[in-house]
Length: 481
Image 1 (spheres, rainbow, N blue to C red):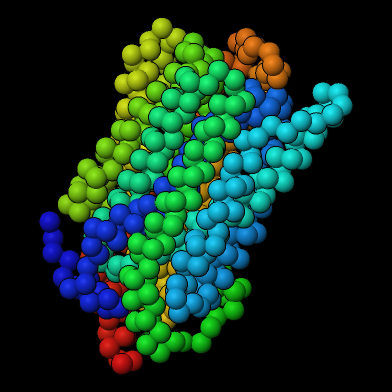
Image 2: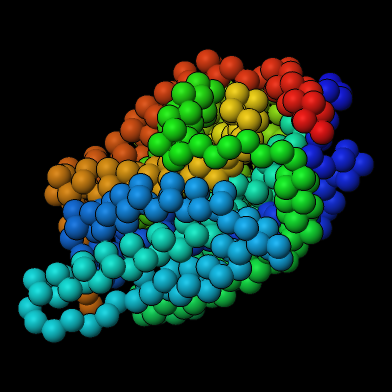
């Protein structure tokens, strides 16, 4: 492994590296958002159609409306966190501190089926507007806690390889949270017979875990975050740039455009596959609903195990090479899912494991690239704008989720998919709906994976280029002091 000696920490001394407790606390900050996002992507669409009894087209629209609202609140929160001043908590942590409880409350409320009077049409209308309102509020508080959290990465360390290590802790908790949520789902689904109550119990347990993990992050990273703030304040600050000009600079940053393209393609593939797998397992493979979490654990459990393997390989071969390795496994798995037949249950689990090998790189690599892009922007403009860059990354994460669920819902609606009626058994799906499910689980996500590979091939910031950027930044900092 090459020695990254040129990449000196110019804001925090090299002797003061991140300790294990700080890395664990930082990783815990993604546990809550990961659990809520994971439960939502795997179960929210099927909850709307099979528990609340909402037609699948309307169910997809609810999810899309919530994410479109994020187009407004993400950049706003990103800029506000950059401007936040707190001697006690710094720029980012106040948002996590005060947003944790509302975030948990509104996550829980989206799994409640409130009673509405009237005929079926009136009930569906009432449920639709209830879930739209909850989606809007839930997305606001998801942004409030998750966007400032993601923007902390480049503030905790400026070392190229240590950032990959820090992100491995983050996504270790993230994917671990996904696995935990699926294990909880499996236990609760097997223990609680009432379908609506299953989701209420699951949401309540996940809400408690979410709030506690966010507070662990706040108190566990506070000293490190304040140390960065103290160093940043000591340096001469360039004049502020208006928000319009900031957005122009961000989108003129060519490496950033590659990163958001890579991430959007990867994340769309994740969300498409994740949202259709429950329908695929039940309707095509013929598995009982209680077995769905087991299949999902195969994907997420493998992704968790591979995360630290990819981190070490990244130090040796680079981020782009690791991304190509992971995507190759994943594309083969998507082809297999499209071709698999209902009696090949063992093969289903093998393909789930293969997909997990690739899914872990979709989590790790794009997020490890973003801090390098931020330093290039600082070199070009003289300002650190983590908030605005991470705002777009978080927005793309949510956009990928929304588009994935919306595409799945519209594809199934056009194919004649039958939603459940509250209190009745699940309907048998027509052949057209089964073929649409197969298309959504195989060829559609594979298209986005290939697009991501093309973009990754042209991504320009290697380890050597990043080392040069940090040297130039250090020279600028030395000339100011």
